[in-house]
Amino acid sequence: MKKKILLVGWHPSVVDYSKWPGLTPEKLETALRADETKLNELGYDASIGFIYEGDTATAQLEAALKETSYDVVLIGAGVRKDDDHFLVFERLVNVVHEHAPHTRIAFNTGPTDSDIAVQRWA
Image (cartoon, rainbow, N blue to C red; front, side, top):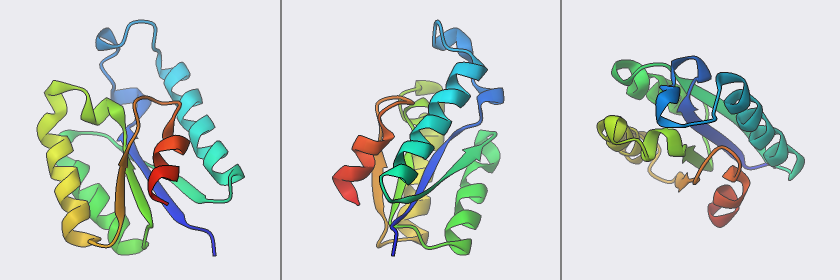
C-alpha cells in the first residue's frame, strides 16, 4: 500500500510575494505541483492541502486529518520560514500532534525539495 502524504502550504493566491523576490503565483503553483507529481512518481500517494488564511488553517488541516490517515504531513517552508506566520506554523504542528499522533511531520526548505523531506520520514 502506498504511503499517504499531505503537503500543507499557502495557496499561491494568498502569498505575499514582496517577501519572495522573483517568485510569482504561477512559479509557485508550478513548483508545488511538480513536488506533488514527483512524490507520486516515487510511489507515494501525495496530495496538496492548500491553506488560505491563518484563522482557518488549523480547521482545514484538522478536517483533512479526520478524513484521511496520512503517513507524513509536510508543512511547507512558506508557512515555517515566514515570521508573520510563526503562530500559524506552531498551531499546524500541534494539530498534527493532537489529531494524528502517529503521523510523521516533515519540513521542506522551499517548493522544490518536498520529496527529500518526505523520504526522511516515510
